Length: 257
Length: 259
Image (cartoon, rainbow over all chains, first blue to last red):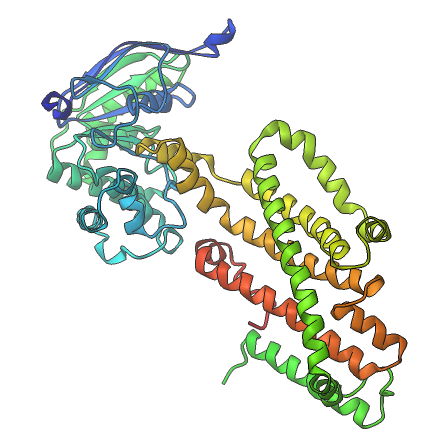
């Protein structure tokens, strides 16, 4: 299916109600509509509990919305499909009993890819995130930032066109967080993936993205979409530029209530 | 050279062994209370055929009881730990049973199963099953369910989620439970043999005690010690091979063992 590899994401009239089966449910997501062009870096921000992580889980095929349609690469998303969509979670999502390499090989081994090919692909993905020399380490022997880079390698190992990231750097300290952001931008630049990035940090969203989707408190709706017209490559100084401050203020005004 | 905790442990053991030999020899302690180490080892050597035959009896009982206690304990623990309903129904029952001194039931078991190996196996199985069950059930509950979601996002089906996530994640706690359960199985068998029996190491301890033959009592005790240490070493070996990721992660690696 060639259409399935083009890296676009399209969500139309998606709504989700928790406990809908038992009558009175909680409306969590309401009329979500957006589309993402191939190769774009799009962040989703919003107050905690607005359902941004749930939305990402639905886009990744891990949960099913009550209504609405999700197309990734032109085809509907019904179940997880790591060849089409790679998912990167928060810290502590590595299997602690497997080495970095084995963690990256995991999705391949589920599909019965031969060991030789697995190793080759895993080492290639680890090289991309700069961790080739740490391939045989166990997760507890790696720093928080390194663990997250292994997670990214695992999300990329099957070369999906779309990468979904659920607050991937939330557990890291500020400094590591921004250097990981730079690292992610470099990988994005080299691989031309479409990236959907959920975060609660406005600075992080603006620093990384082409576009920021702003969600309201529950029921989560998309209340603004901001084209981040800051020049690339971005450096740390961009965060003190007037335009950055202005965009940050615009988002802040909308989600503070 | 600086002394590491391991060095100190070995040194303490050595001191203990030397004292064991020296104190009775010097007449500080009557040999009826504490025979010399060499005397006990000599007794062991002289009656080696008898000791060997009885060791086999005990070993056989321990192995069969281990299968029941650990197999049953792990299986029941997995079932109970994985289901919320079973947990609420069974866990309070299991933990209160664990608090009961089960040894009071042993005379009953001899009435039901005779004074041969069967009653020891049944008693030790029950004795070791409860802690194994409780430990395993507790372990299952501590599994990070987030990891199951992670596996699902990579396309793992239900069977792969169980085999590739649940099973490896429970191994450390199951092994820890086995270690406790297994040690209790050995205790159960030996105690049962000491109470009522016609063979086994516990039987020898009991018999030699009534004959006031301290050297042979200690010889038999040494064999039980050896049995317990060997079992523990085996479990620790398996732990190191399969669960190294957790031991070093949580700083439980430096146990109080000599191994």
